[in-house]
Length: 129
Image 1: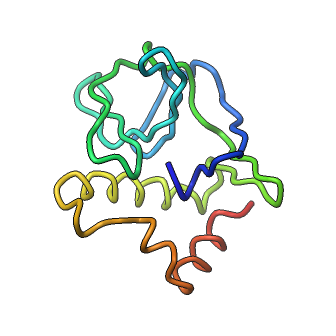
Image 2: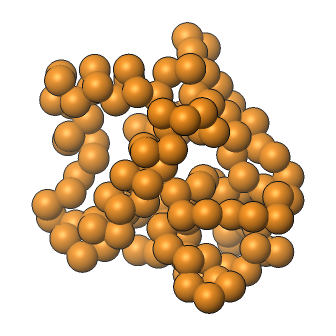
């Protein structure tokens, strides 16, 4: 989930909310370990999960299979509140990015985009709480 969730950051997770929406980062069990990935699509009552930089989806999940929703990402220098108004756009942007990354993986490498100084400043400005 780089660049949103970097190694060493802490996650504040709200356990078992009843409603999930596209763009939310959720926590679930994957191969016996905790994982945090984004909901990229909802289909009927199923949710499709994918890590932002993964080349494949995790599959279909029911809301009851998810452990919770990430509310905040805590770094030593700052905290990202995923529920504040300005981050709602970013949630949808990253969900769209992840879906496009499935179809055109050679075009969309967020790690490369994140190194462009202007985009890095814009991203940092928009996510800091």
